[in-house]
Length: 129
Image 1 (cartoon, rainbow, N blue to C red):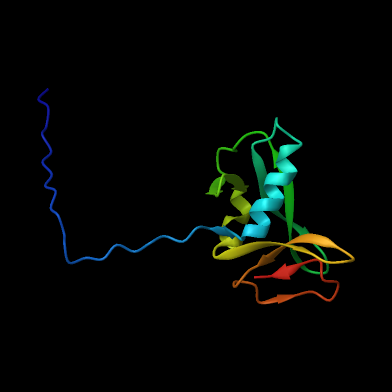
Image 2 (cartoon, helix red, strand yellow):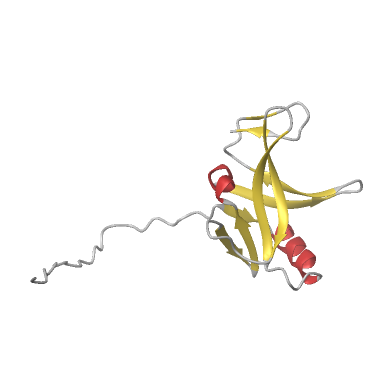
């Protein structure tokens, strides 16, 4: 048997602009600070995991959990020292989404500002893509 040789040429292309990639999920400073605060009390966990579940009238709902490890098919977002893992099922639905932590007199919650959502259900617990 003879070994076949494969040749390849590398060329520098100076006229082509590099396209910056967008993170699947962007965290606002309020979200980063809240995640840091939540994880401070849980040293065995490395971050939060975002997923989607069928819920509400007829759509999907986001879930948030503490996680100790990155799953094999999880997308990892690292921003300002915070790690957020996105489950495979949620990756396409979260593209371009901004995660915000909102606090007022009556409630506090993470809010996902998702440009891909076409509508939400009447109960407010689910969304349609």
